[in-house]
Each structure stands twice: as C-alpha cells, then as structure tokens.
Image (cartoon, rainbow, N blue to C red; front, side):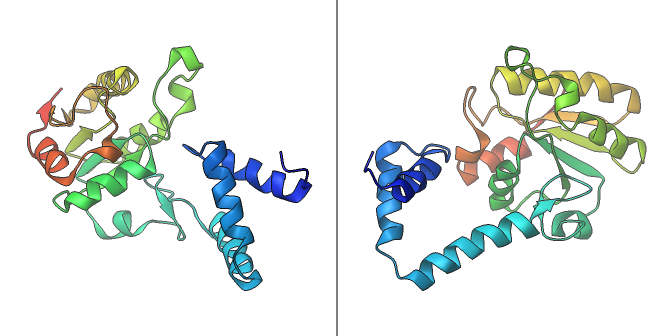
Length: 196
C-alpha cells in the first residue's frame, strides 16, 4: 500500500477489526502515527493487559477479570437470560430492569456455517439448570433465523427440567441485533416476554 512495511502491517491489523474498512483502517493508523510515543505505548499496553487479564466467567461465560463475574456473584440464579454473545449482556443491562443472571452461548446454531450444538455453550446451560434453583430461562437470542432456531432447540432440551421458558417479546424486530435495540424497546421486550 504505502511501501512502508510497518505502516502497512498496522493498517492490515486495523482492517481486520469488525466493521473497519480499508479507509477507516488507514485513518486509525495515521491517528496512531500522529500520537506521542507514550500514548502509543499505553495503548499497546492496554491491548496486552485486556488480552492477558480478561477471560470468561466460569458460570455464565461473560467477560470478567475474576473467576466469577460481578453479575453472577451478586444476583440470584432463579432467572437466567440466554444471549448469543457478551455485547448482548451490555445491551440488556442498559435497561436496568433485569435482575437475574445470564448465560452466553458464544454463537448460535448455523448448519450452513457448520456450527452445531457442540460448538456453542449449550451443555454448560444444561448443567446450570441441573444444579437446581432456576425457575425461568429467558431466550434472548437475536430474532433472526439462527437465533430463532437456537431458541427453539434449547427450549426443547429444557422442557423436561420443568423450568418456565420464555422468549423476548417481539418488541425487538425480526432480523435485527439485540445490541442495536434502544433501551425502551428492550425493556418492553423483557417485560412482555412469552412462554415458549
């Protein structure tokens, strides 16, 4: 690109980030080049620290820097909200009306992408239910084909356990991602959830 190997490498790394095209990656690289060396070192250290210290909660699978995340360590497990990925937890937490715990699947079922039940955290959810105390499981996967298929598959597995299984109300529109829903829409979807 620029015939400067280290700059091209930096642009390439930025362009590998989600939703970052070539021009944005180039802007990011130029931004870094125009910063003082101390800023760049602190930025690099922040990346290293996050990569080293942040891992999955051993209960729910959310990001944490402890063995158990703050949500799992402070809330009752009688209601578990099942989501696709950690950023969905952030979206629901903005609503401030959900008081249960979460379970992050880290994906959804997708036969076209060769992603089956063993490729996401379904077994871990079943183990949590078997431990007891869970009264309701809210399926909060995205309202798209993969999210719906995943919710239906998991609900069939959970039926024998006798827990109430609900799905977010259609306040979240079909084909959209939970992370982009506004607080009012998410609040209404959680309040109006339906049993599956």
